[in-house]
Image 1: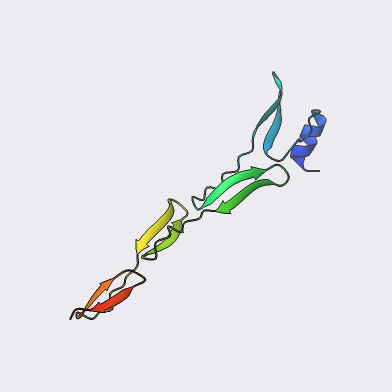
Image 2: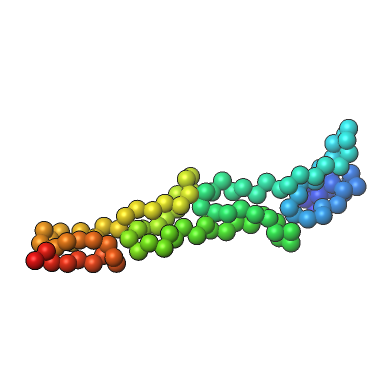
Length: 105
């Protein structure tokens, strides 16, 4: 039995589910607050499953645009950057429709 579980047991509290933080206040009695499930990663969606506790799910950062490279920065979240389609040939018109290159003549 973990220390927190022993304290709850002595105070007559039972852990109802992993999505709450239960405690005891000397003045007001039993307390309950939502579990802190934020992992601090902007690339995950945080939640709580009553059966298993805190959960994290990767964010879907695909913007559906074949002309961008999608990614995720843990500090700021989803990112996109343009795909570089320049083939280095001045005689072609480079553009992004799946990085298609057309001759200029």
